[in-house]
Image 1 (cartoon, rainbow, N blue to C red):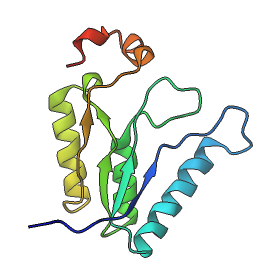
Image 2 (image 1 turned 90 degrees about the horizontal axis):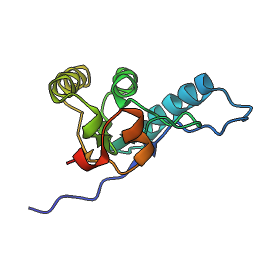
Image 3 (image 1 turned 120 degrees about the horizontal axis):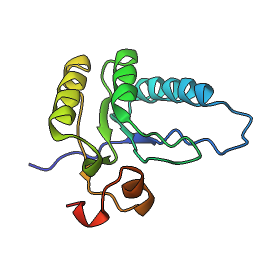
Image 4 (image 1 turned 135 degrees about the vertical axis):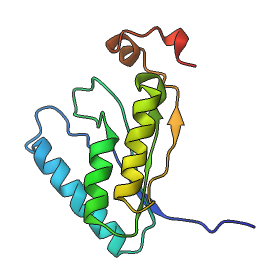
Length: 131
């Protein structure tokens, strides 16, 4: 059975250094956009993940997805992409189970192995072990 095309939004919470917009404003306005996206009938909201970025790039989708789930009732949430080498697998499974319960089953998961050398260095992991 073919699946229907779904529409959604992606957020990364980036804010260039020196911007007049504060990070709390970025978060507040992003949550407003997620609520609006749901009201407009969008079905998906993805949160991206990167680490050690000067522009505030979202490093942890877990609390953000939980907050967004509390503000909405139907839009689904997913990672775009969860960088698995930087996560303890048991803790990730627990976090996702909690998110799925908070959201009423609206959590989806996309995983990846990462590529940015500075992230592996920041976590003290050799990039050769990313698989």
